[in-house]
Length: 345
Image (cartoon, rainbow, N blue to C red; front, side, top):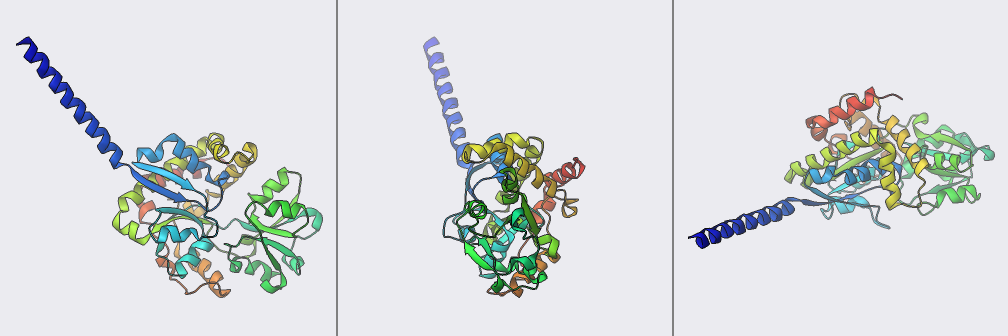
């Protein structure tokens, strides 16, 4: 009898062990493999994402996240629009152009509420107004849309034909400006300009927003089919992003340290400063109630700028580009907005 009881206990233990193993397998199977395609090689603006990944916020939402930089020679939106990948973080100009070309992508949360793009020159050049760019060389990424910079040149009485656009690879624009191979670069006031300043090259910054450009900065997006077929996944991803931003706001340097791990050529102090500036931008009135909330009039202005310069295949309707359903549903969006609005400058 004792032997039978021992065998019975052993069998029970074995069954329990098997159930636990099956549970572990089910838990692993429940994890969604997800790819996020970002808009640039990792730097300060991406610190919350890498920091949140390290903190386990995506795993907590059942997401096994892979973050990938831009694919050389390919339009990132193609990966998401065709369903090969799930999510993207895009500059609004390339996102609008993708939508206008027929790719079924949709923004579900804004990141930077206004375009940070600027024309940046060295102070020693004396070029600090649009009109002084006539006949000058401007570094340019192939994926940028020239219509975005047209209003700035128009303010100086110039057309796009008055400036020579020099296509460069990402990361080469600052070296070329410092070496005098170009007269200006097109980039971020808190990105390339700050980097140049901290490396001993004082700059002039002509921000597009100072010349009447009402244009979105960066947005998180997915495909229309994924949003329709699996809104729960989109919500879980957005929730993890929001948690990541909440954590990074209070742990900025620690978040940037995760960037240095994947981009060791970056400078920790410099990227931390960039990230701090970006978090100040998040205190926008647009995000008073919900972080990431978007507005049709700003999308309309963004579309008009690109369409007016002839850079869109078709002119999409503003309401087709975005949805606020996700950010308005998630309490983390309101919590992050409150946290950012309440923090000091």
